[in-house]
Image (cartoon, rainbow, N blue to C red; front, side):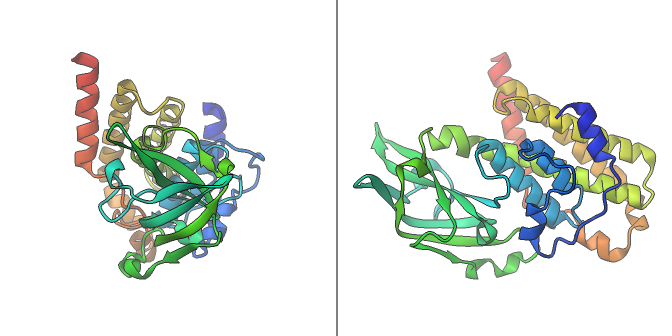
Length: 306
């Protein structure tokens, strides 16, 4: 997708879609979507139809997963399942993948599986053992409904305004050799995910707010800045999104995004109160803390300047 194509899609007269059925909303990319769109093009087409921050955040979350796993089927809803009882650090990932004849068996428990209740495909981090004192991790492409997989949503009743979440109980699940991704799961998928998700979630909200603002007569300079930030996010998505240089450009993007959010100000009064509640900053996505962004930025500059 070229910048010109991106702008054409952004300014299409697209109406918001009902996202109460979040799974159906994410599967419907809108008219004119190519058979196999890029992760960012799919993001634009889905997020531009979001009627609340939760739906936009889910669109960003899905696009980030597709960025990492481009072979994901076009119509699949996905989940990225890493965290366990002590969090997502590699040493704390105890779900075990063990050989079993021509295939493998997967056992363990995952916490905080965002979107897992709606997913067709779950990408699950698992340990294959220790090497030189380091936990060796690989990702498993697990179809929903596989025998031995149980989802438990009972711990997440307080998160009704966020993406659906569940714990995963993995009990002696049969895994084919072709369902294991050969790359190092931490370096290739887990480490970059939060940063990629942060960019895609922020862009998704901006895409949706551009449609909302146009519908309610927001000032043209605010709409212009929203469009320009989405173009900037698209440019960032064309980089590896992992090098120090990439992180520095992302930092500028996040800073400009935060500044624009504070400038929207009185424009919110032009939107009915019910819609304002659905677009409140705390709804829809947990995001990445400002402290984590600052840590990444500082490390990037140290890497470049020494």
